[in-house]
Image 1 (cartoon, rainbow, N blue to C red):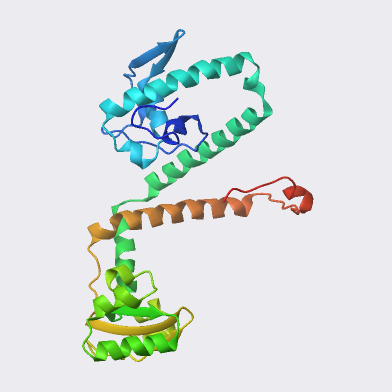
Image 2 (image 1 turned 135 degrees about the vertical axis):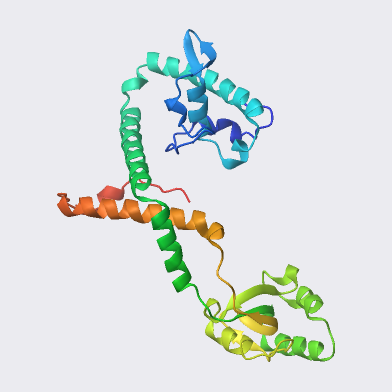
Amino acid sequence: MILSGFSHRGARWLASVAVAVLIIIPNGQTAWAQDDNPVAATVNGETITRTEILLALELLSAQFRGMPPEKLFPLIREQLIDIKLLAAKGTEAGLRNDPRIVARVDFYAMRLAHDYYARDIVSKYLDDELMQESYQKFLENFPEAEERNISHILVTTEEEAEKVVAELEGGAEFTATARSYSVGPSAPQGGALGFLRREQVVAEFAEAAFALEDGGISAPVQTQFGWHVITVSERRVPEPPEFAQVEQKLRAEIADRLVADAAKQEREDAEIELFEMDEDFFAGVTVAP
């Protein structure tokens, strides 16, 4: 069934099996921790509650989660009605004990136990002090290297590059010339690459770009990508970002590290035996791209 406002692909999202991601609702409590759990519908006497709608919401892409709840929730309810009806028929047909379903239920139960326990670890140890310590380390390691505002024109042969240099030296404007000649992905932007540090580009390119005076034009430079004609417009040593600008990034990195450290500690006392994954192990397996 295709819901109004949903693409065909989008209308099938709830039918997919996915690992749940915890959705925190505005008052800070998780959906299933609510004392008040109103009913949105009944299907042959079985209820569809707000909790189920919020759980279903977790399987949606961000594209749909951005819709207003008053528009999105009725659409989810309609999908849940269809799911409950067909799930009931599947149960009648004996699918509840189908090995495919049992295996997935066990796997996702394990994954959810991991996710909740990992969340508890992060909640216990990730505090303001640890955040500030991480930010100070971030500042200590923040690169102070000079950045150059670089543009380039990429062509396939040295002869083409020499022609570009001749036109630029004859007064042609760099941006327009890049749009006319460059085969690089930056061509629509007039060849602009933005501010870059030396280590962010290949050695031959960096040597030429960082030797230029502002407004200078390089001789043709060959790299693995082709032939470049380079110009730079300004230089700077960037200031480190404020804490608020990197807070979420640092929080995610610390959370990953805390969970990884907990798993590493558990591995030290665990009995783990690895078995060879030979040709038979991979027989019949196709991994989708």
